[in-house]
Image 1 (spheres, rainbow, N blue to C red):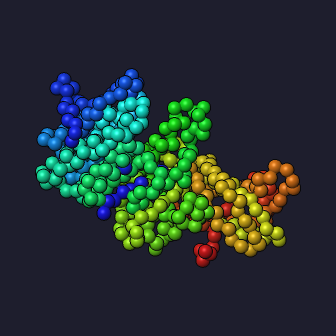
Image 2 (spheres, rainbow, N blue to C red):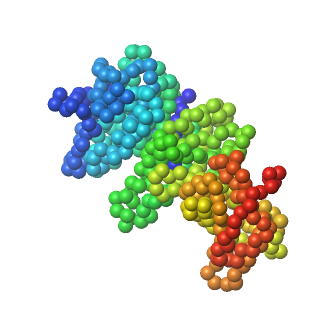
Length: 417
């Protein structure tokens, strides 16, 4: 079965220029994009033996490629300006840092460089044929399909899919970066899969407006290769259910682990085997900037207002060092009823180990009209990422609408749920 994981020999292979000491990705100009380019495919191998200097390989010359190790192919997509992908070098180095493997860049810039998208997309099956021919020769030399991994970006994801189909779904793994509809065993949807935080919202953002959201998938994958940022995703039927805290059971001890975005998503495949069909959607939120990690907490609130109150909560945390992080839980109004606990999923850009003060703001969102009070019988803060941490409580608060209430929390009783 084809394993797809989702913050998809009509040409000759280009040989290395003998005068080029370290072969590099094909660099073309916008003029080339206007006049169009014929297809040539160049395969460039990086290993820990030649981590910074590529070897050009083909189906008869394999260089340092070790057939017993994992081989990861990186396939780029549409290149309307002819420039190399700015993320390519970081991705190569990140992969080699986390595992001793073969990393092969599939450089089809001569073919992908055009201002007409359909001209580039028409060449994708031919690129897939080149990869099929190369992998066939790898298999003859003793390689295993289980050790073949393809990372495809944009049109490169389609190429990866075509190769996977040629092998009847027997490739070890495919990661497709850049497609919205569910295709894989697990499909990741950062921030719901639409607009990404930190990206321009209007065309006034220039070229970044057209590529920022789409390109974010690559940078989120890159973040998974860094030790300081492991992005947790939550299997869920919808983004709304995730935002409402209905899909975080995988983060609770004694439950199945939550899938991690990116390179280590493969660790979740044992849980996928238990699903029928073995497919799932996973949602998560990200910060606006690198490394994009978000830290999840539950804010449990029990109120004792006589009447129902509807509104949003903004919570701010501060530690003794003066670090501050804030979460606005305002995606939809929360409904507070007397003596009923409301559990709100808060997302923070920083993970403060020891919180010294908490502030809460209640708002109905009304610009005109009376101001309301929210009478809080108990507030509790608990970390999802670190459930072993002590839970923090505060009792008997009155929140005046749009007025910040700052207080020092106390440890919750251990038996309290």
